[in-house]
Length: 367
Image (spheres, rainbow, N blue to C red):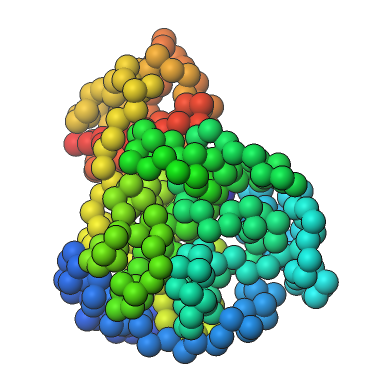
Protein backbone atom coordinates (compact mmCIF):
# COMPACT_ATOMS: atom_id res chain seq x y z
CA UNK A 1 0.00 0.00 0.00
CA UNK A 2 1.04 3.59 -0.49
CA UNK A 3 1.32 4.24 3.21
CA UNK A 4 4.45 2.06 3.13
CA UNK A 5 6.17 5.04 1.56
CA UNK A 6 4.47 7.81 3.52
CA UNK A 7 7.23 8.28 6.10
CA UNK A 8 9.88 8.35 3.43
CA UNK A 9 7.95 10.95 1.49
CA UNK A 10 7.42 13.05 4.61
CA UNK A 11 11.18 13.30 5.04
CA UNK A 12 11.84 14.65 1.58
CA UNK A 13 11.00 17.85 -0.27
CA UNK A 14 9.55 17.50 -3.74
CA UNK A 15 12.88 18.57 -5.23
CA UNK A 16 14.53 15.68 -3.44
CA UNK A 17 12.42 12.59 -3.89
CA UNK A 18 11.83 12.94 -7.63
CA UNK A 19 14.66 13.38 -10.10
CA UNK A 20 13.57 16.79 -11.34
CA UNK A 21 16.10 18.65 -13.48
CA UNK A 22 17.47 21.76 -11.82
CA UNK A 23 15.33 24.78 -12.68
CA UNK A 24 12.62 22.72 -14.38
CA UNK A 25 9.80 24.50 -12.51
CA UNK A 26 11.45 27.89 -12.02
CA UNK A 27 8.80 29.66 -14.12
CA UNK A 28 5.90 28.10 -12.18
CA UNK A 29 5.38 31.07 -9.86
CA UNK A 30 1.65 31.85 -10.11
CA UNK A 31 -1.59 30.43 -8.77
CA UNK A 32 -4.88 29.36 -10.29
CA UNK A 33 -5.15 29.30 -14.08
CA UNK A 34 -1.99 31.40 -14.37
CA UNK A 35 -0.04 28.57 -12.75
CA UNK A 36 -1.77 26.02 -14.98
CA UNK A 37 -0.60 27.91 -18.08
CA UNK A 38 2.91 28.23 -16.67
CA UNK A 39 3.03 24.47 -16.19
CA UNK A 40 1.64 23.97 -19.69
CA UNK A 41 4.50 26.00 -21.12
CA UNK A 42 7.00 23.85 -19.20
CA UNK A 43 5.67 20.41 -20.21
CA UNK A 44 3.99 20.96 -23.61
CA UNK A 45 6.89 20.22 -25.95
CA UNK A 46 7.42 16.53 -25.30
CA UNK A 47 8.93 14.14 -27.81
CA UNK A 48 6.04 11.98 -29.01
CA UNK A 49 7.24 8.39 -29.39
CA UNK A 50 4.01 7.26 -31.03
CA UNK A 51 1.39 4.77 -29.90
CA UNK A 52 3.16 1.72 -31.37
CA UNK A 53 6.16 2.16 -29.07
CA UNK A 54 4.23 1.90 -25.82
CA UNK A 55 4.40 -1.90 -25.47
CA UNK A 56 8.19 -1.69 -25.13
CA UNK A 57 7.78 1.00 -22.48
CA UNK A 58 5.38 -1.21 -20.52
CA UNK A 59 7.65 -4.24 -20.53
CA UNK A 60 10.60 -2.16 -19.32
CA UNK A 61 9.02 0.22 -16.83
CA UNK A 62 5.55 -0.95 -15.74
CA UNK A 63 6.89 -3.79 -13.63
CA UNK A 64 5.64 -4.89 -10.21
CA UNK A 65 8.44 -4.21 -7.74
CA UNK A 66 6.01 -2.61 -5.28
CA UNK A 67 3.42 -5.23 -4.26
CA UNK A 68 4.23 -8.90 -4.95
CA UNK A 69 7.66 -7.75 -6.18
CA UNK A 70 7.53 -10.52 -8.80
CA UNK A 71 8.59 -8.48 -11.87
CA UNK A 72 5.30 -9.08 -13.66
CA UNK A 73 3.38 -6.38 -15.53
CA UNK A 74 1.79 -3.96 -13.05
CA UNK A 75 -1.86 -3.64 -14.08
CA UNK A 76 -3.89 -1.24 -11.87
CA UNK A 77 -7.14 -2.94 -12.93
CA UNK A 78 -6.03 -6.38 -11.68
CA UNK A 79 -3.43 -5.62 -8.98
CA UNK A 80 -4.43 -6.71 -5.49
CA UNK A 81 -2.28 -4.67 -3.10
CA UNK A 82 -2.97 -6.87 -0.07
CA UNK A 83 -3.32 -10.31 -1.66
CA UNK A 84 -2.06 -12.49 -4.47
CA UNK A 85 -3.20 -11.32 -7.89
CA UNK A 86 -5.77 -13.50 -9.66
CA UNK A 87 -3.49 -13.61 -12.72
CA UNK A 88 -0.23 -12.09 -13.94
CA UNK A 89 1.32 -11.07 -17.24
CA UNK A 90 5.00 -11.57 -18.00
CA UNK A 91 7.07 -8.82 -19.66
CA UNK A 92 9.06 -11.38 -21.65
CA UNK A 93 5.96 -13.11 -23.08
CA UNK A 94 4.73 -11.38 -26.27
CA UNK A 95 1.73 -13.71 -26.25
CA UNK A 96 0.47 -11.93 -23.11
CA UNK A 97 -0.13 -8.79 -25.19
CA UNK A 98 -3.59 -8.61 -26.84
CA UNK A 99 -4.56 -9.91 -29.48
CA UNK A 100 -7.88 -11.39 -28.93
CA UNK A 101 -9.49 -12.01 -25.56
CA UNK A 102 -12.61 -13.70 -24.28
CA UNK A 103 -12.39 -13.17 -20.55
CA UNK A 104 -10.44 -11.42 -17.82
CA UNK A 105 -6.94 -12.83 -17.47
CA UNK A 106 -6.38 -13.58 -21.19
CA UNK A 107 -4.02 -10.73 -22.14
CA UNK A 108 -3.23 -7.05 -21.56
CA UNK A 109 -3.21 -3.98 -23.78
CA UNK A 110 -2.78 -0.18 -23.47
CA UNK A 111 -5.51 1.62 -21.55
CA UNK A 112 -6.04 5.26 -22.48
CA UNK A 113 -7.00 6.76 -19.13
CA UNK A 114 -8.48 9.64 -21.14
CA UNK A 115 -10.42 7.78 -23.88
CA UNK A 116 -8.80 8.23 -27.27
CA UNK A 117 -12.19 8.76 -28.90
CA UNK A 118 -12.29 12.13 -27.11
CA UNK A 119 -9.38 13.42 -29.18
CA UNK A 120 -10.16 11.27 -32.27
CA UNK A 121 -7.04 9.12 -31.77
CA UNK A 122 -4.85 12.07 -32.72
CA UNK A 123 -1.15 12.46 -31.94
CA UNK A 124 0.53 13.27 -29.65
CA UNK A 125 -2.26 12.44 -27.19
CA UNK A 126 -2.68 8.86 -28.39
CA UNK A 127 0.90 7.88 -27.59
CA UNK A 128 1.43 9.97 -24.44
CA UNK A 129 2.85 7.52 -21.89
CA UNK A 130 1.68 9.61 -18.94
CA UNK A 131 -1.90 8.44 -19.56
CA UNK A 132 -1.24 5.01 -21.08
CA UNK A 133 -1.31 2.10 -18.62
CA UNK A 134 -1.05 -1.65 -19.20
CA UNK A 135 -4.38 -3.20 -18.24
CA UNK A 136 -6.21 -6.46 -18.79
CA UNK A 137 -7.83 -6.36 -22.23
CA UNK A 138 -11.25 -7.52 -21.07
CA UNK A 139 -11.33 -5.07 -18.16
CA UNK A 140 -10.13 -2.29 -20.48
CA UNK A 141 -13.09 -3.08 -22.70
CA UNK A 142 -15.35 -3.24 -19.62
CA UNK A 143 -14.28 0.27 -18.60
CA UNK A 144 -14.88 1.35 -22.22
CA UNK A 145 -15.13 5.15 -22.56
CA UNK A 146 -16.99 5.64 -19.30
CA UNK A 147 -15.83 8.47 -17.03
CA UNK A 148 -14.30 7.75 -13.65
CA UNK A 149 -16.46 8.09 -10.57
CA UNK A 150 -17.94 6.38 -7.52
CA UNK A 151 -19.92 3.32 -8.63
CA UNK A 152 -23.14 2.93 -6.67
CA UNK A 153 -25.65 0.54 -8.23
CA UNK A 154 -23.56 -1.85 -10.32
CA UNK A 155 -24.44 -2.56 -13.94
CA UNK A 156 -24.09 -5.93 -15.62
CA UNK A 157 -22.04 -6.60 -18.71
CA UNK A 158 -21.86 -9.91 -20.51
CA UNK A 159 -18.76 -12.01 -19.99
CA UNK A 160 -17.17 -10.29 -17.01
CA UNK A 161 -17.81 -10.13 -13.29
CA UNK A 162 -18.61 -6.82 -11.66
CA UNK A 163 -16.63 -6.00 -9.57
CA UNK A 164 -13.60 -7.37 -11.39
CA UNK A 165 -11.08 -9.68 -9.73
CA UNK A 166 -9.36 -6.81 -7.91
CA UNK A 167 -12.53 -4.91 -7.03
CA UNK A 168 -12.75 -2.32 -9.82
CA UNK A 169 -16.40 -1.54 -10.51
CA UNK A 170 -18.78 -0.27 -13.16
CA UNK A 171 -22.03 1.32 -12.02
CA UNK A 172 -24.21 4.38 -11.82
CA UNK A 173 -22.36 7.23 -10.16
CA UNK A 174 -23.24 7.63 -6.49
CA UNK A 175 -25.04 10.96 -6.60
CA UNK A 176 -24.25 12.01 -3.05
CA UNK A 177 -21.29 13.02 -0.91
CA UNK A 178 -18.20 14.11 -2.78
CA UNK A 179 -19.44 12.44 -6.00
CA UNK A 180 -22.75 14.34 -6.18
CA UNK A 181 -23.83 15.95 -9.45
CA UNK A 182 -23.72 13.08 -11.99
CA UNK A 183 -25.91 9.99 -12.32
CA UNK A 184 -24.56 8.24 -15.41
CA UNK A 185 -22.44 5.09 -15.57
CA UNK A 186 -18.88 5.42 -14.26
CA UNK A 187 -15.86 3.20 -13.73
CA UNK A 188 -14.32 3.11 -10.25
CA UNK A 189 -10.78 1.74 -9.73
CA UNK A 190 -9.72 0.46 -6.33
CA UNK A 191 -8.59 2.99 -3.70
CA UNK A 192 -4.91 2.19 -4.26
CA UNK A 193 -4.95 3.78 -7.72
CA UNK A 194 -7.54 6.54 -7.43
CA UNK A 195 -4.96 9.24 -6.82
CA UNK A 196 -2.93 7.98 -9.79
CA UNK A 197 -5.96 8.44 -12.06
CA UNK A 198 -6.65 11.90 -10.67
CA UNK A 199 -3.10 13.12 -11.23
CA UNK A 200 -3.13 11.73 -14.79
CA UNK A 201 -6.24 13.83 -15.51
CA UNK A 202 -4.69 16.95 -14.00
CA UNK A 203 -1.63 16.40 -16.20
CA UNK A 204 -3.67 15.80 -19.33
CA UNK A 205 -5.90 18.86 -19.12
CA UNK A 206 -2.81 20.97 -18.44
CA UNK A 207 -0.56 19.56 -21.15
CA UNK A 208 -3.26 19.83 -23.84
CA UNK A 209 -5.06 22.97 -22.74
CA UNK A 210 -4.35 24.64 -26.07
CA UNK A 211 -6.20 22.01 -28.15
CA UNK A 212 -8.82 20.58 -25.82
CA UNK A 213 -11.54 22.99 -26.98
CA UNK A 214 -11.67 21.17 -30.32
CA UNK A 215 -12.17 17.71 -28.86
CA UNK A 216 -15.34 15.63 -28.75
CA UNK A 217 -17.66 15.96 -25.79
CA UNK A 218 -16.94 13.97 -22.64
CA UNK A 219 -18.82 14.08 -19.32
CA UNK A 220 -15.67 14.77 -17.31
CA UNK A 221 -14.91 17.95 -19.27
CA UNK A 222 -16.85 21.21 -19.26
CA UNK A 223 -18.95 22.13 -22.27
CA UNK A 224 -16.62 24.92 -23.37
CA UNK A 225 -13.42 23.01 -22.53
CA UNK A 226 -11.71 26.12 -21.22
CA UNK A 227 -10.11 27.27 -18.02
CA UNK A 228 -10.36 24.57 -15.37
CA UNK A 229 -11.58 22.10 -18.08
CA UNK A 230 -12.88 19.52 -15.61
CA UNK A 231 -16.65 19.51 -15.01
CA UNK A 232 -17.49 20.26 -11.38
CA UNK A 233 -18.84 16.82 -10.30
CA UNK A 234 -15.73 15.11 -11.65
CA UNK A 235 -13.37 17.83 -10.50
CA UNK A 236 -14.60 17.23 -6.97
CA UNK A 237 -14.14 13.47 -7.36
CA UNK A 238 -10.60 13.86 -8.68
CA UNK A 239 -9.64 16.41 -6.03
CA UNK A 240 -10.91 14.05 -3.35
CA UNK A 241 -9.10 11.05 -4.84
CA UNK A 242 -5.91 13.07 -5.09
CA UNK A 243 -6.18 13.85 -1.39
CA UNK A 244 -7.29 10.38 -0.29
CA UNK A 245 -4.54 8.57 -2.19
CA UNK A 246 -1.21 10.44 -2.01
CA UNK A 247 1.65 10.19 -4.50
CA UNK A 248 3.33 6.79 -4.31
CA UNK A 249 6.87 5.64 -5.01
CA UNK A 250 5.51 3.85 -8.06
CA UNK A 251 4.23 7.15 -9.47
CA UNK A 252 7.51 8.91 -8.70
CA UNK A 253 9.49 6.19 -10.47
CA UNK A 254 7.14 6.13 -13.45
CA UNK A 255 7.26 9.90 -13.78
CA UNK A 256 11.03 9.72 -14.01
CA UNK A 257 10.79 6.91 -16.57
CA UNK A 258 8.30 8.81 -18.74
CA UNK A 259 10.52 11.89 -18.59
CA UNK A 260 13.45 9.83 -19.88
CA UNK A 261 11.18 8.34 -22.57
CA UNK A 262 9.41 11.41 -23.94
CA UNK A 263 10.97 14.43 -22.24
CA UNK A 264 8.23 15.87 -20.06
CA UNK A 265 7.01 15.36 -16.52
CA UNK A 266 3.73 15.20 -14.61
CA UNK A 267 3.96 18.29 -12.37
CA UNK A 268 1.25 16.99 -10.04
CA UNK A 269 3.41 14.02 -9.10
CA UNK A 270 6.51 16.19 -8.64
CA UNK A 271 4.73 18.77 -6.50
CA UNK A 272 1.24 17.77 -5.44
CA UNK A 273 0.60 21.24 -4.02
CA UNK A 274 0.07 22.40 -7.60
CA UNK A 275 -3.32 20.64 -7.61
CA UNK A 276 -4.88 22.76 -4.90
CA UNK A 277 -3.02 25.87 -6.06
CA UNK A 278 -4.83 25.57 -9.41
CA UNK A 279 -8.17 23.89 -8.65
CA UNK A 280 -8.57 24.38 -4.91
CA UNK A 281 -9.65 21.81 -2.34
CA UNK A 282 -12.56 19.37 -2.76
CA UNK A 283 -15.94 20.60 -1.70
CA UNK A 284 -16.96 19.40 1.77
CA UNK A 285 -20.21 17.67 0.80
CA UNK A 286 -21.74 15.87 3.73
CA UNK A 287 -23.35 12.44 3.36
CA UNK A 288 -26.63 11.79 5.11
CA UNK A 289 -25.30 8.50 6.45
CA UNK A 290 -22.69 10.45 8.40
CA UNK A 291 -25.06 13.05 9.83
CA UNK A 292 -24.48 11.77 13.37
CA UNK A 293 -20.67 11.86 13.29
CA UNK A 294 -19.02 14.23 15.76
CA UNK A 295 -15.31 15.04 16.02
CA UNK A 296 -14.07 16.67 19.20
CA UNK A 297 -12.25 18.63 20.39
CA UNK A 298 -11.78 20.42 17.07
CA UNK A 299 -9.58 22.41 17.26
CA UNK A 300 -7.71 20.13 19.64
CA UNK A 301 -5.44 21.52 22.32
CA UNK A 302 -4.22 18.16 23.72
CA UNK A 303 -2.97 16.42 20.53
CA UNK A 304 -5.94 14.05 20.73
CA UNK A 305 -9.10 13.84 18.62
CA UNK A 306 -12.18 11.78 19.43
CA UNK A 307 -14.65 10.47 16.86
CA UNK A 308 -18.16 9.51 17.87
CA UNK A 309 -20.37 7.87 15.26
CA UNK A 310 -23.57 5.88 15.09
CA UNK A 311 -21.94 3.92 12.25
CA UNK A 312 -19.33 1.20 12.59
CA UNK A 313 -16.27 2.58 10.84
CA UNK A 314 -14.30 0.40 8.45
CA UNK A 315 -11.39 2.81 8.18
CA UNK A 316 -9.93 6.02 9.54
CA UNK A 317 -7.33 7.93 7.53
CA UNK A 318 -5.64 11.16 8.57
CA UNK A 319 -3.96 13.14 5.80
CA UNK A 320 -2.06 16.40 5.93
CA UNK A 321 -2.80 19.22 3.49
CA UNK A 322 0.01 18.04 1.20
CA UNK A 323 -1.91 14.79 0.68
CA UNK A 324 0.48 12.68 2.76
CA UNK A 325 -1.00 9.97 4.96
CA UNK A 326 -0.23 10.45 8.65
CA UNK A 327 -2.43 7.66 10.02
CA UNK A 328 -4.24 4.84 8.22
CA UNK A 329 -6.29 2.53 10.46
CA UNK A 330 -8.26 -0.39 9.06
CA UNK A 331 -11.07 -1.76 11.24
CA UNK A 332 -10.53 0.75 14.08
CA UNK A 333 -11.46 -0.34 17.59
CA UNK A 334 -14.19 1.40 19.59
CA UNK A 335 -13.46 2.24 23.22
CA UNK A 336 -16.43 3.48 25.25
CA UNK A 337 -18.27 4.11 21.97
CA UNK A 338 -15.52 6.48 20.78
CA UNK A 339 -12.64 6.18 18.31
CA UNK A 340 -9.59 8.08 19.57
CA UNK A 341 -6.55 9.41 17.70
CA UNK A 342 -3.67 10.32 19.99
CA UNK A 343 -0.22 11.97 19.88
CA UNK A 344 -1.08 14.13 16.89
CA UNK A 345 1.38 16.82 15.87
CA UNK A 346 0.30 20.41 15.50
CA UNK A 347 -1.21 21.12 12.10
CA UNK A 348 -4.21 21.09 9.77
CA UNK A 349 -5.52 17.71 8.63
CA UNK A 350 -8.19 16.01 6.56
CA UNK A 351 -9.89 13.13 8.32
CA UNK A 352 -11.45 10.48 6.07
CA UNK A 353 -13.99 8.15 7.70
CA UNK A 354 -15.20 5.09 5.79
CA UNK A 355 -18.22 2.92 6.49
CA UNK A 356 -19.83 0.36 4.18
CA UNK A 357 -17.97 1.62 1.08
CA UNK A 358 -18.98 5.25 1.74
CA UNK A 359 -16.71 7.98 2.98
CA UNK A 360 -16.74 11.45 4.40
CA UNK A 361 -13.85 13.91 4.74
CA UNK A 362 -13.69 16.35 7.68
CA UNK A 363 -11.20 19.08 8.49
CA UNK A 364 -9.31 18.71 11.78
CA UNK A 365 -7.08 21.28 13.48
CA UNK A 366 -4.50 20.41 16.15
CA UNK A 367 -3.04 23.41 17.97
